[in-house]
Length: 233
Length: 233
DNA sequence: ATTATAATTATTGTTAACAATTTATAATAT
DNA sequence: ATATTATAAATTGTTAACAATAATTATAAT
Image 1 (cartoon, each protein chain N blue to C red):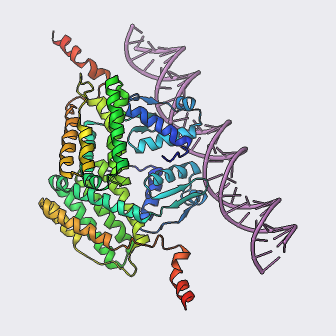
Image 2 (image 1 turned 90 degrees about the vertical axis):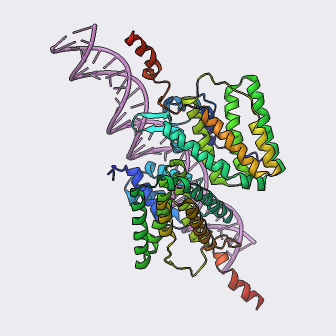
Image 3 (image 1 turned 30 degrees about the vertical axis):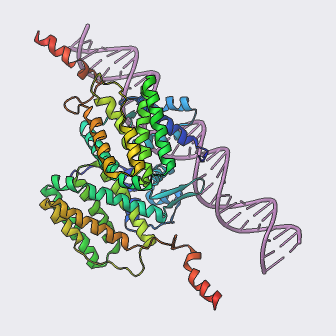
């Protein structure tokens, strides 16, 4: 591929963005400017520029005078995120089937292969990131940059949503959804592919409980049950 | 409405963004930092932050060490912009019909009314801006922020596309497309509404000649025909 | 006269100091 | 002891000086 010399800005941005995708940075995590400066050995100007970009991606929240934190999407936000993903990811399938070249199929299969390796290795971070990468790369097959860019943001936001609302005790389970989708796209079977994607996204959203619980690392809600039990005893 | 005290940043951003929507700033226009500083009476930090935001909207191009200019979308970009708009604007219609409240209908009708006034007054800038506002506000009815935000960007980019590729001699013509769409959405007639929108967007894209001509304020292409005629004479 | 080169000016990019705000700590009073 | 206020430290926001790059003008050579 085009060994494009990445700028410092881009590299640092990618590092933080990847950390979000891999859930090494979870909602609510503080992003202190001075710390980021030390970690990446750059001035505050650079860091502030990157934090602004991440905030426009809705991956970081910029609280005036109070610093940046990893965003905590509300339940309603998550519903909209998934509704948007359905619209985009199902909507691009016709074009994806139309344009899918051998290089595309190869790239997608490579991602799925690495994803499965990660799952079998117990590399949760890698698995999450590669699953997201798959969806973004698939959108790339449809040759529409604005759509792909929005999906890139939505996938990152989905990682945050997962960290907040994923049903407890849910482990990484290998499934063939991604492989099946690659095959359908390669074969140009748009109808089948849309069905697969619809099911796949529904499954992902179903794994989350978007009802009452607002956050999970909030102490009040974490201990709410025990306190209540003790009070009524 | 919520008389939300707008920050300085937001205000300046809106001013530049509006100028693009109204084609008072056209593709290629230089945005010199020092000039913007004088105009808005703020420091360069503020201006640079706003230019970064506009560049992420793909409305401004940031050329390293060479300053910012209003973006010049290529023909292929414009195709993707319109493809994305079709996907989004048709895709949200079901939800728009589902959620459309009286306040929504009212807001939409108000925009259309002002748009027609602008057309009859010969206020081209206003007409273009309000047409765009209509599409963004309609997306708002579907209650999906990520989609609406992308559409906001795409509408601004469409203004640039129009400035570059609009068929010459094309004047503002009143048509009832927008009114019809409001009525269909209000009545909850999703199928009809999708047809109307499909036609409306097709019409808009058809008004542009996305073939050979790359730009229009490029001297070479401007004088290409006369030079050629003289050479063969 | 025209091109090439060098010096100058203007513009963008970065750094570091300063100001304003918030958070943490210490002192005081109830 | 607990709550409240005052003080100090830390953090964010802004400004202005400095450095690096690009554009312009002036000079010299063909």
